[in-house]
Length: 67
Length: 264
Image (cartoon, rainbow over all chains, first blue to last red; front, side, top):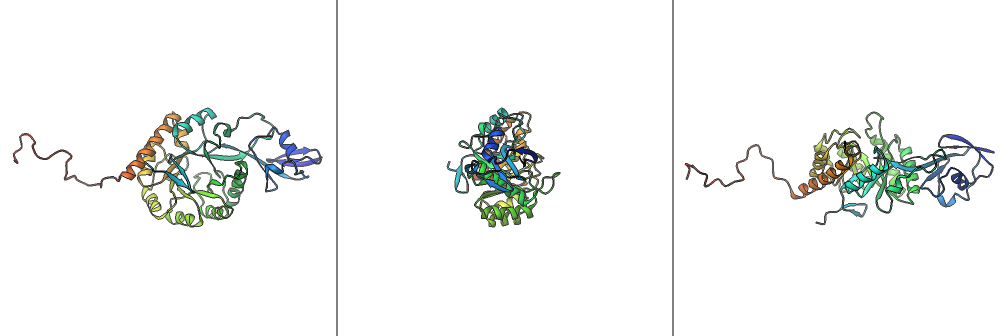
């Protein structure tokens, strides 16, 4: 298992989980999101190829109402 | 009349820009945005739910990017670093979209802009290819510096964000419109339709507002009032108002032929 932080919440994941698999698991596949891994943007096109590692810090964002 | 608002080379018919926050639900957001006639709509970037709320409706489903020019903001950012990071995420979220609203705030009580951090963020964003519409104070020197950095619109406050206090320093706004070549858009402080009209009469290129509409008793009706006010103010600016005079020596009706006249 690996331990990652997603939007400030700790989460245990199976080894060699891809970003795409995590997004799928969170029910966000196909949704308009943007994802940052350890401060770097992960383009949607690389979701399948990027494997998460122990200690990764992820931010997942969406558009909301604002002024 | 061909009087378009041009920002970063793109033309818009509406000079009213609106935010999408503080509405009671998405249906009201959509109705107010439609009534406002706005083409440029601000949005915020926030952490997504991470599985705890599947099927949550998305703002972009009711305000599709194909129909509106979405303007992601950096509301809630207090440093240049956070603002830049937020807008990089926004660019990814919106498929490479580069038109953004930069705001770096100074403190949570006043939400007054921190112009030092704003300038630092603007430099980085412009260097990274963003088209930056920048929220700032009504300081004409800072406004000019932000233009010189390469911002595509300067957006001074009329009064504090969400205050509805109206235009507290029309003279400063006028100084800015006279010094800056890119569009000057009043952002923040408008409370009611007359405020929007005054901003336009001063020569501003547009007005951006959120709370003035969302915080009205009837937001959709206020959105429509704001649309008309911005149009009326713009027309009055283009028409050129009559000079103000303490006394009028020239009545609107003929001075001759008054009944009972003893003069002729």
